[in-house]
Figure 1 (tube, rainbow, N blue to C red):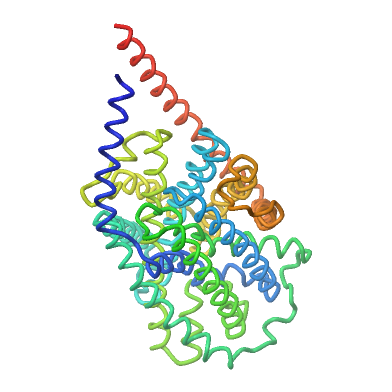
Figure 2 (cartoon, rainbow, N blue to C red):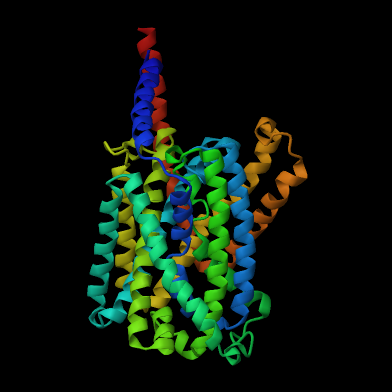
Amino acid sequence: MVSKTKAVGQLEVQDATSSTRSKRSLGFWMCTSLVVGNMIGSGIFLLPASLASYGGISLVGWGLTAAGATCLALLFARLASMVPREGGPYAYTRMAFGDFAGFWIGWGHWMSLWIGNAAISVALVSYLQGMFPILSEQRWLSGVVALALLWLITGVNTLGVKDAGIMQVITTICKLVPLLALLVFGFFRVDWQHFVPLNPSGKPPIDAITAVAALTFWSFLGIESATVPAGYVKDPAKTIPRATLLGILITSLVYILSTTVIMGIMPLSRLGHSSAPYAEAAGLLWGSWASYALAIGAVISCLGALNGLMMMAGQVPMAVAQDGLFPRIFGRVSRQGVPVFALVLSSTLASLLLLLNYMGPGNLVEMFSFIILLGTLTSQIPYAFCAIAELILFFTRRDLFNGRRLFGSSMFSILAFVYSVWAIIGAGATTVLYGFVLLLLGLPVYAWIRKQQGEKVEGGTDEEAA
């Protein structure tokens, strides 16, 4: 009797959600802009300052990161075509490993998203400082502005998925135009002496490349963006893989070329202390007006990335909750089909992380570097699970692979797994410690959920016996 009621309740939720999605679906270009917009966000505009101490060898790290990200993109493209379900990495992990692994990966993926929102807010304020110097003079004011922008985008996302998708298309176009202008014209002004010596960090080359890979992968977080809102996507089995692969191609080219141009224009000693490297580089090329133009472009870029990750920060816990592995309140949606509680809680946690960092002694670049390493760690663990999930599905659900052989299905999965483990190592012992503690905090939540499930089963048995 209880199980029947539960089934009817689920059916009603699915019908209501399906009705909303039919009116608010995402097409190919919205999905592509979601992937590109989430990746080309804060990382590209502030990372050159974090990489300045590594010099030219950082380009090698960028290349390896792009190769690893491409393997992950191919992995997610195949998984999305076989399992076009909401939740992305969580959905694939649960299907392969079971409920607990699904919960743990959903927990880690969700953490990486709200941590990412905190990092983007820091980068956004760093570019606003160039236009409003008072923000660099008053640290508390920078914190207030970061929080205000975070909650502004939270409000936009409560309006609905399609409205957030439209904003993503607009911000993606606005961010690419000034970037491409800087790449095209700045490339002819590169001073190649800035790349000598190749590795000024003093670390062994392999250690320097590993550290760079850990930092740069932050800029590729969002590879799975199109897989998460799969229930809102038109023809997801085709749209998601195509959008994912096109997105990774665009971002890889922009990242490597832009880092080359910025390091070639600005001396590394100056670049390492810059809170707005792209704006400063544009100022060196064309004057102060260009510096302001690039700063505006960076702000728009960060807003777009914040908007995209905010959408995912609601969609991921909603998908887990609808499967009964997160508290049910995460799965509740508004009339617009938006998981408002999940969005608000995600932004609350991001706000706490912002407050902790703005009250600390470090500068913006140091703050940004720490947060992105933490975000990279908590995202790489879900990615590693997804890589092995495809192998498990190959042996347990051969019907999903349409006759493909093991070698063809496993090659990129194994490469993606190796890369994820390497990136986790590169995050450093301190970051791994903090990230592992955050993951462990999910265990009491899972225990509480199982307790609730056990009480339901016992209640249903008693009622039927009566």
